[in-house]
Length: 123
Image 1 (cartoon, rainbow, N blue to C red):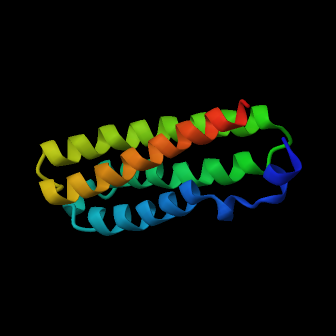
Image 2 (cartoon, rainbow, N blue to C red):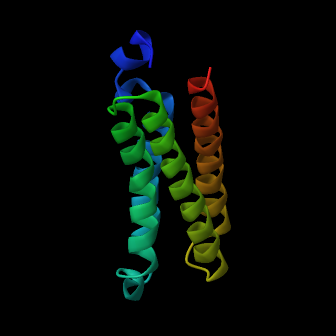
Image 3 (cartoon, rainbow, N blue to C red):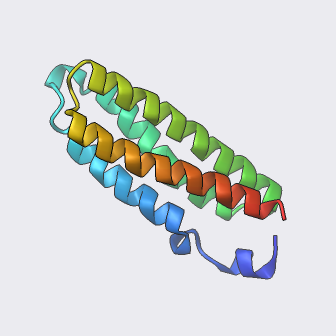
């Protein structure tokens, strides 16, 4: 990892900032789900959302670019998991289409940013 990458904090990364904002939006959206889902879909959605910025942060503090890329890959996997769970929530009518579209749009941007950051670390 270069000195520039190592000196930056994960808090400086736009993808981390967007991921944190998405977590907030996810918590707000899932607070409207039926109480019966609090220990089911709500918990899974929130866990997947929180995992994205958490893995970005942990990876940035690792000792090598290879490890950082691995944690970005894990974050991307959590994003795909979240995408699937949002589709399910929409399909069972827990998530209105407008909210689904907004959350999915944010998630799509984050996924693209994760891929781009990972590719940039390969250079």
